[in-house]
Amino acid sequence: MIKVNNVNPKALIRIVTGADVTKGALLVLANETAVEAAAGVATQIIVGVAAESAASGAVAIVYPVIGEILEIDYDTDGTKTTFTGADIGASFDISVASHNYFIDPDDTAGPLRLIAYDNDKGVAQVMVKALYCAVA
Image (cartoon, rainbow, N blue to C red; front, top):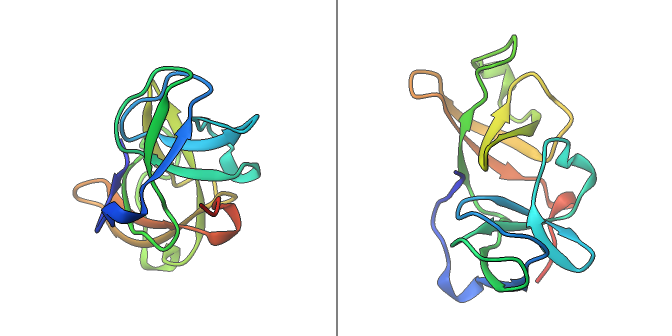
């Protein structure tokens, strides 16, 4: 699950879902609806993070991600399983497993910009690059 820090409740987005969505999922646009993102999100427009679960065709409440700091767990299945100071400011993609979202330290072609990390906890703080964000 992705956690959005410092949420502005007045800025929440409401959008119809194109499939079931899970709380904490990263949502992207697909045929004018919101669906859960898959790995390789670098070519999609990100709506935000689901504030709650919603059924297909329902109106989902979504945290916008423009200018927000997100917390996301590391994907530790690859060859690179930690970050270093040299990674700060670099771009990374996501990986997804059973509605759980992770930052992929091996994939440096994605919408997430690393701003802080905690290798002991396996948690990164990231921002979504504006190029990938939908504007409400």
